[in-house]
Length: 348
Image (cartoon, rainbow, N blue to C red; front, side, top):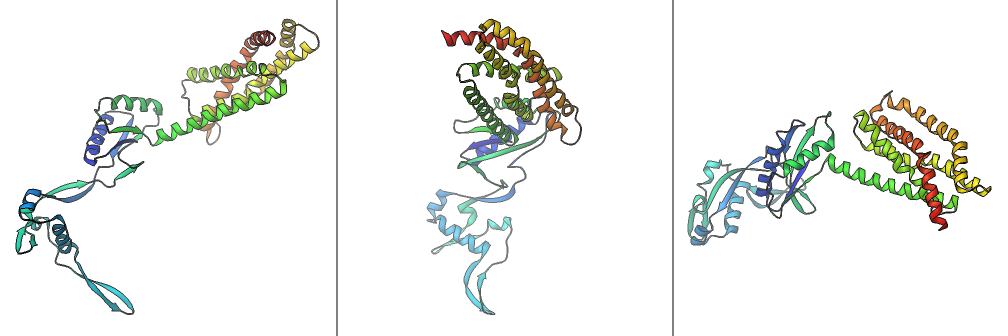
């Protein structure tokens, strides 16, 4: 959904039609409609203020007499079976063509309506939408399922550059795209919060503010694998894949925790930093590989698409598997090097 915001409805309608024309050639979209399509027919009376001033006829006189003619006049009430009923006096209905011959009475004057106003037949919008007290026009379209959603949004944004929006008018892509943006914003907050909580737990456990940063380095290493596996398989990163990355913030650090804890234990036993890193790598390589391998094998069935809702679960499993592969391999190489550098900084 594309929303055009502004003040005057006729300008919004024109801009909305231009947006529809820009979106119509896109093969990825179908059933493109605007909120102004198929509006109600409407009869507008455009007052000629010059003639009305010459005849000394006010707008209230014209509107009140037309209201009595078209809708009737209230003539009081009457009681029927214990209830009060309204009495309305109405004249026979007239056609649009007869509207010009309606006579407006002002004092001793009798003036035809066609001399005071121009009658114009137009189309009124089905509804007048507002958002944050601003009038908006909507352009809605359906998306073909085989096209990535964000690619289509980028194409629409490029086409919108061809439209010259006045200063007080602008557009915004909403609908499913707005929901997608809100969902990703919430997931970003969840990812940041998960990293902070993991850091707090490790800082308390290791009684250090520096070594937890060494372990948290595993998260970007895991993110590399999660993105890479989607690139290799030609899949799109969706919300479920992002949820899988949030899970990696708690899963991928396990290997680093095992390795760093072993290094600290060996240093407390009297080994030097380099010797402790080498010895811990030799001792923990098997548990690290076994821990990651069992998690990857357990998630493999989800990627094969068994059962209902497999299309939702598969991206999450792929993200975790790809992240664990790269984090396990790089943990054994990168984390010992980073630990050595961080330990030197802590002592210096």
